[in-house]
Length: 423
Ligand SMILES: [Zn+2]
Image 1 (cartoon, rainbow, N blue to C red):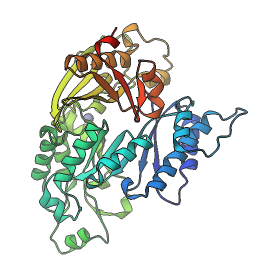
Image 2: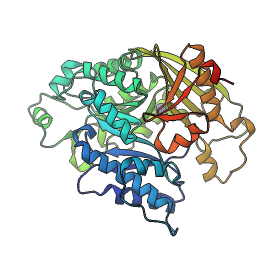
Image 3: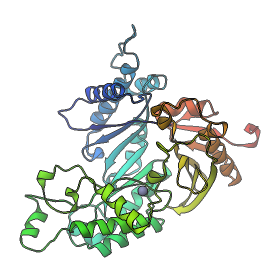
């Protein structure tokens, strides 16, 4: 599952999803990026807010674009506007397969029927606009949701196998660096939260907002750059090894920002430099992922990290080098009383190999890392007394699991682990 280019598509009505995906794939291909595995990220608002019919059309058009792109140059290049189910089925065999779909939504929009709909569309990851885990701060900023809704959404999504990302916003009205750091500690240690992914969007003060009026009345002051960097360093120091920090800034045009640390577009680098200066490191997944420093001869070790989360047991498996500075593959397994579900399987490194021209040098111990992790997850599941294992596989990953004995059932890839099926 390596080398997926993140294809970000905005859900704005004036944009055509088919054209957007097609153009992006073409651009990626022209710049030498592999386009066989596509991770689709639908951005630009609260996904759940859009009508069901529109959502279905939008996602179907994304699939249609990938399917059509796969056949470019071939005689049989036309795909009719068939239903989503048919387009997904075609995508399983397409050259550009959608291996995952991420959407952004509000915590209070997540419920059983919303989850069912998301699965039907092929969504595998949900970014929750959590912002803060303090009801007073949420109310002061009129976010419209409570901490309780974040707790519930996180549990429902994890139980359904989704990868959960939190969008956090330090510097909100009513907060301060001390409170912000305490909230990050809370989400990393309290089993009610524990997100898999994290986006840190420091508050940016934008003109003509309610907050701007408070700022003009001297009732609110955004963090200084120095304060913000200090806070981000403190946050990065306490990030658990199973969290992937995706971003620490939001795309807001600098001209719209009055004040606040977010103007600094290279915040990640500034924070990284400061950490080097202090002699500390961020242990998050992203900072450990093997990239250009891929070494096919490196000895790998299987690590197993367990933690309680949202009423279940999370088992984070990873192949890393001994010092855990380079991560080559990971798997997230969740076990509750009667179910086991693989929420993520990701193998890194192949893309770096391709771009450095070192293809075909992979050693035996680096091949089949994904399969080894899946076998390990099956063993842990069996040992836990659970007889069935499910995977929330993206549509394009279904053939991979079929080959490992899994069958499609209700949008999940499922394998029975009962003794008579075991080998
Ligand atoms: Zn990191």
